Length: 240
Image (cartoon, rainbow, N blue to C red; front, side, top):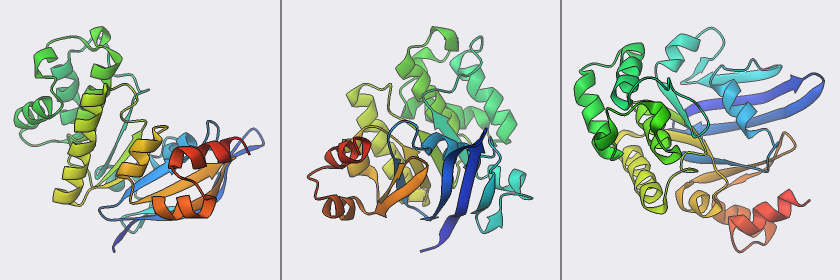
């Protein structure tokens, strides 16, 4: 399998506190890689470093075979990110938000791409509503649509279905799996929904206190911790 992301000895300090402690892992083309751990484990800080939002204190990141440092712009053209906790321009409508990002990403035929994503995420009926009037679930779908505008090769997701009702969450998972199969999209994502992680992930990374303590297929994790589900394993780890 082709490696699209390489992380070696990645470390991050905040005022002397080691938030991420010399972690190393790879992600492969077309893989869905789950990043799990209790609050404060270092998951979000890791994502921020992979996106260039936070500068590592040490270690190396290579994406598409290129060192992130020195090739940032080239790499970021081929990746995207979505989070339930990122705010979009509230005064712009759904469609206006998507058009702004189309221009930022240099999307060809933006009208067609926007219409396609409005239908996929079932938000065409709210396309003229300002973002400030959207529910949390609608904002989540808008952020996911934004993240797919540039047809990324790698998608970083932070709690992608946290604010979605069960029906839309299930459709979103199905959409991500379909895009993965059709385009070889690689996805690295965090979630506290253990059932979702077990269903979606090819492999799972467990972090705790800034370190990787386990990395395997979900069934391998269950065997290692003698757990019946990822939720049971998560509780064992979170409770020490």
